[in-house]
Length: 147
Image 1: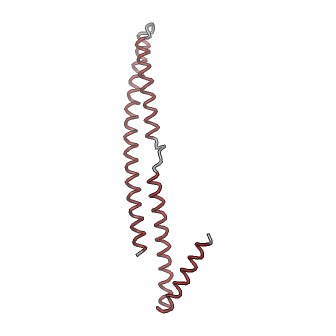
Image 2: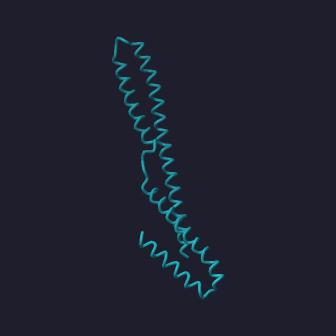
Image 3: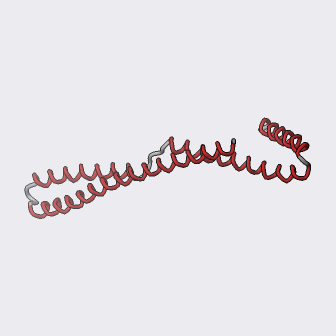
């Protein structure tokens, strides 16, 4: 009964983890797309600024305006690049990952105990297996208390 509950808990944690990772990937893709749009705009505007600098070197009014727009596009591209780079941590996903790992470790412990006790039960018989199980659980409990 406990094993099935732990398996269900591990599966639920895994589903939550996958959903959160998909949301994170979608968010990164959107931010990356926005950064790409601003990067393309920056490159296009860089060409315009270079053209205006060569064409109207004496009159700086159009160049100053183009340089200001270029600077704003560049700052926005940098901001969205940082957002897309994945510097954000998802605490829910981290907790789901820890819960999954703990549940799988407990399932492994339970299945190992069952695999050890089954052959012993065949050799000793049903009457003696209860004493063996009690001794194993006592040793396990005392081992956890000393840690």
